[in-house]
Image (cartoon, rainbow, N blue to C red):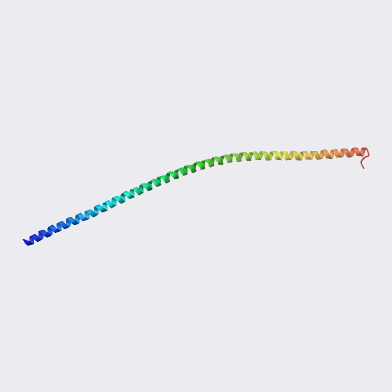
Length: 136
């Protein structure tokens, strides 16, 4: 009977020890769970901040991209205008070159005509002087 009482005592002690040990481990697990929950909450806040920062950067990048597109479109428009003006000016320059060539030819013709008239006039004066014995 003593053996049985010792056995029961040991059994009760073991049960109590297991129960205390179980409660101790459960408390530790609850503490770890709370720590993990706090860490998860902290990480969620960090993620939200990062998401917000990424969203802001994305919006800024889209804004800059749209601005760059508008600038490129304006630059293309200005380039097309310059190209049109250049073509117009090239045509105008060709017309001016032709007009210049015509005027140079007219000036050359007028110069030859003047020289011919001068020569004819000089000959006429020399003939008159010979006829009037003024020429030596």
